[in-house]
Image 1 (cartoon, helix red, strand yellow):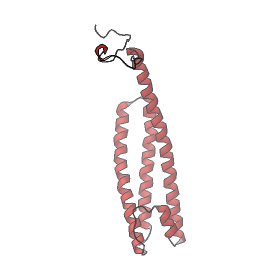
Image 2 (cartoon, helix red, strand yellow; image 1 turned 90 degrees about the vertical axis):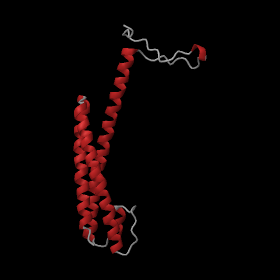
Image 3 (cartoon, rainbow, N blue to C red; image 1 turned 180 degrees about the vertical axis):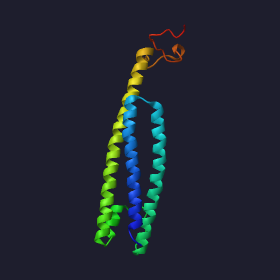
Image 4 (cartoon, rainbow, N blue to C red; image 1 turned 135 degrees about the vertical axis):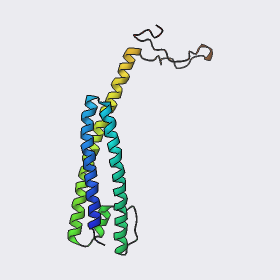
Length: 166
């Protein structure tokens, strides 16, 4: 068995991760603009790409297992491409696998950094929403640590700007 089928799968993984990277960049702009409808559309697209990645990853595991069997090794689903590079004898196959692995890891690293930025944007947006709600409704009165059960008020008191009984 040759390494070509594994390299095709690695190329497919690279393409799908690049597509996710593009969506993550688009998501950053959408989060800044606070465009919730567009954000939902991006999340749906990401879900589809994640399924494609899962399928390609299963193919990668199968190809590595087949290659190991053809070389007389016991297949192990936990063997990575880096482990396989150590086993491959042909220099050009090692070079091709190393390059494919390097490109994929670089793309995954960029994607992780961008997802971290997007996560921070979402957390800041949620903090701002909570702050705004507290301004309008008033902060909940959580000063009381213990209150006798007969004196307990049910619900949360929020002395806000608006009269909610009106």
